[in-house]
Amino acid sequence: MNLGTSLQFGIRYLAVLTSASLLWEFAHMPFYTLWQTGTAGHIAFAAIHCTIGDALIGMAALALAVVFAGGAHWPHKRRVRVAVVMILLGLIYTVFSEWLNVELRQSWAYRDIMPTVPPIGTGLTPLLQWIVIPLVAYRYSLGAVRTNVRNRPKASVES
Image (cartoon, rainbow, N blue to C red; front, side, top):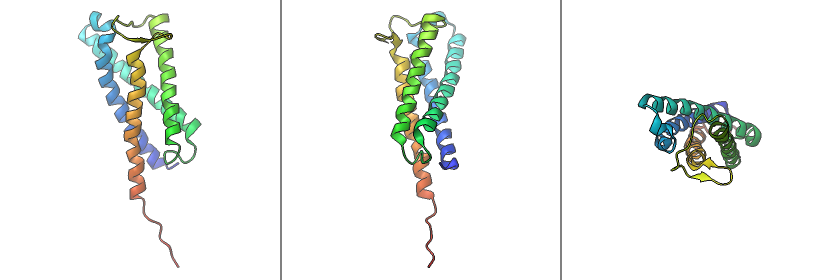
């Protein structure tokens, strides 16, 4: 694993993941009761707070996927395997977190317009968030890998 390539990948991934998550948090806020009951300040705080959590969850999911599925040659090899594990980890955490915070702690609540996935009852928009955004960020970040491969000096052969 090339540390420079991995670092570039991680920076790109975090930048896209965080900015897209912030947009998503505001976009799907109307599906939560906070949209109707909270002030603009509460809504903004919730979106920023959740975006920071999204960044931490997303980076942890990527790191765990690389460790357990990537091997020494990632990101040059096993890209799909890492992406699948990363998405699965994000989805597992999302199902757990939504259950914990909606059902158990009642930290937030869905409005009746939130589509939920039976039988787990998890909101559709949080699940889609953890499929779409990490995949877009991952795909974009692979550009760091392709750029490094193209810019690598060619080995010279001495006779």
